[in-house]
Length: 173
Image 1: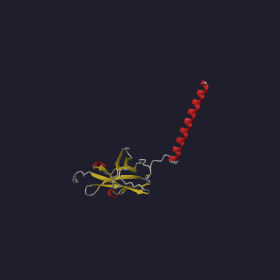
Image 2 (image 1 turned 180 degrees about the vertical axis):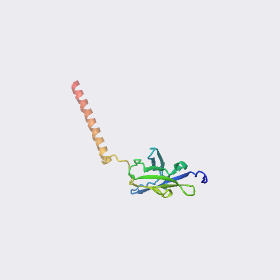
Image 3 (image 1 turned 90 degrees about the horizontal axis):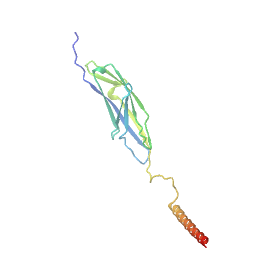
Image 4 (image 1 turned 60 degrees about the horizontal axis):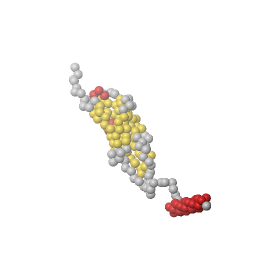
């Protein structure tokens, strides 16, 4: 009769994220606050996290005895928040996690065939935004042009009022 072994201790498998920003304009942006999504390709479940100021983020997945010799498929990608001047990284990582029981009766995880702790999903965005002196209005004329037009309009209005009054006085006579 083989010896009865205790159930192996559950494990947490990290999916580490690295976010970098290449600033090409006057305005500099850090790597904090970008949303990264982990999609379970079997269930369709979506889990998201945001990057820290240093650009790092991590998902931790729990596995137990019932997961031995099973394969779990995920996709990791960055969402595009639509920030003006940002070119987002379109990379999608396919993540296949397999759980095995080693000779010491411990659960061991592999991601894409390699040790789970060696996996790193890297996303690199380019940000190009320059300082602005104010909102663009499309009007490139000087202010003096507008002032001259106001005076011409006022003079025309006064001339029309005087002409109208003279015509009314002629009609009365």
